[in-house]
Image 1 (cartoon, one colour):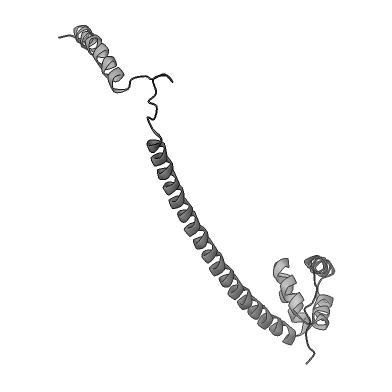
Image 2: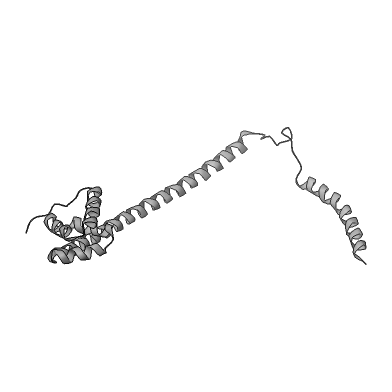
Length: 164
């Protein structure tokens, strides 16, 4: 059988099958108009459907409530972790500031000049004002001015410290 004969044969088979398939689909999926829609014969099926929907809503509410509780728990854990991290960071910054306070101001100035501005500002604001002033005085004018502007923009300049 050549290609054209196969196409004709296949075409005949399909033309015979299509009406049967279409008819079968109509049997399986009959179209309904609004007048043909089944109407509930009594209130019981409507009540059952309402009851099922209410039960489904209760399950969904419970699921949502569980998710909310899970979210709140995770949020608390995250806040606690953040608090611990902040405390550790403050502690490390305080230790680093003490190291800079014990350095000669010229050495501290050279080291701070090599740091990025954000880190330098953090260290300078953790120092005693007198020490920070001495260090800034030893820096190049442009760098000292830039750091001073960033310190002012940061907000509260120096934390309250007790004098030794």
